[in-house]
Every structure is written in structure tokens, then in C-alpha cells.
Image 1: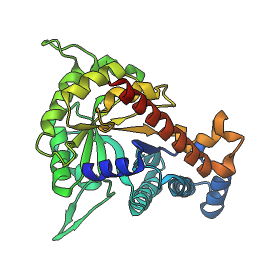
Image 2: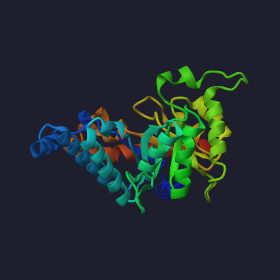
Image 3: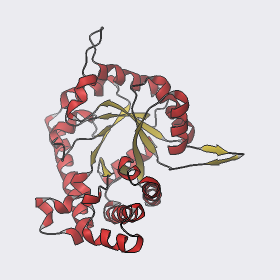
Length: 316
């Protein structure tokens, strides 16, 4: 997975992952009306609306970005129909050649984690047959129940050529309540987790020098990002927090290596809801939601690319 992701990043010159987090409030009225006409104002209608919305976004940006990241909570809230929309979204994105990172943030006792791993990065055995459930290329994990909650995923990932991104320092404001706490040896908790990520990924390094075991490090904490980048030099970093959460292109730079690799930056609302933003809504509006998303990706690519070029020119 990681080599495929890096190759797409290099080809497209876009270290960008689009977060497919389709809150119904982001879905234009014309899509909801069509879905409700077909399925009613039901869970099925909501699921159909977000599926059609996702399809429009992916069709518009799929040639510009290497990866997408559907957040499963935005689908689970619509029950079984929502999960069906999640599955269709994953399959459609893979058909488009996109790397799909399932943002599931799982992490439980060993047997439960093994079941989650079978369902999301598979396979699961049924009799003498093997099947893949949701078929993501990688998933996000919460490591705070310890290694036995993580290892079933890593084992499955290595067997199936998939990947994981483990929460190390998250972008949300209260992350420091636990992650910044100092341990007896003077390290903070996020530093301990970063060291474990480096350890867990040591034997799964691809041809570009990066492991199938990656990390999640929020763009809203650039000082901490600089620390963990050194602690886990072989971990590819998934970077949330750019744009809507307030982080800038300058803030994300500590996550990248000297060659401009090592990180992929997520934007969700800033892309999929771009048509509602002041910058885009006059030119595009609800009817042009997909074109607005494409324009937002192009602007994000330019913003990040310029920041990386300035850093390189400065010799940092």
C-alpha cells in the first residue's frame, strides 16, 4: 500500500487526501431531493444522497489526488443503508485507482480488533472461502488499549498488502489532556506512542524507505510534529487539521522529509463543502459543488507545493 500511495503522490505532485465525510448538511438540495423522491425521507434516502454526493466529488477530483479518506461515522449514523453507501464509496474509489484510507479509529481487545481487522482490511474466512468486507487499503487505529489492540491489524495489513495509520498526536483541541501528559521518564505520552509506531513498522519498510505502519499527527501541533518526525523516520504521516481546523501550509511542513515526502495532508470540509465557502460559492454554487471541490483541490495543491518549495529553497 505505502509504495502505491507514494508513487501516486509523486506522479500527481499532490500530497493530499480528500476526506469523504458527507454530512447531509453538505449535500446540495438537488441531490437530496432526487434521493428522497426515489427512496423517501428515510435512512435509505439519506444513504442514497451521500452516495450520489460522494460519486460527484470523486468524479471531479479523482485525477488530481492520490487518496481519499471516508470517515465511517458519517455513514454509520444512517445504519445499514449508510454502511452500504460506505461500501459502495470504497469500491468506487478503488475502481478509480485511488488509495482508500478507512477512517475507522478502531482499537479494542485482541479478539475484537482481529474481527475489525478482518472486516476492514481482511480477509474473513467463511468455510473454506476468503472474502474482503469493506476493502479499504488502509485504516486508522486508536492505540490507547495497547499493543494487543494494534497487532491484529498490523498482522492483517502485512498479510494483505494493506496499511495502518496509528493515532499519535491528534488535531483536536483537547488532545493534550492525555497525549501531552509527561511520563516518569520525562517523555510525553505521544512520544511513547511514536516510539511504538517506529518499532511496530520496523520490518515492513517499502522501496521508498517508508513503512506500512504510519501515523496520524495533527497539523495544528507543528512543534510536536517536528518531534515525532524524528522519533519515527520510517512512518508515513497522515496529517489532519489543515484548513477548516485552522492549520496552514506552513504548519504542516514538519511532517515532511527533506525530499517533500513522508506525509499526506487531509482536507474534508474544505474540499467537499467548498461550494458553501465565500471563495467559491459565487462562481459555483450548489449546482457546481463538484467543480468547486476540484478548484479547492487545485488551490490546496498549489498552497502546499509552494510551502514545500520555499522550505527547500531556504535549505531547511
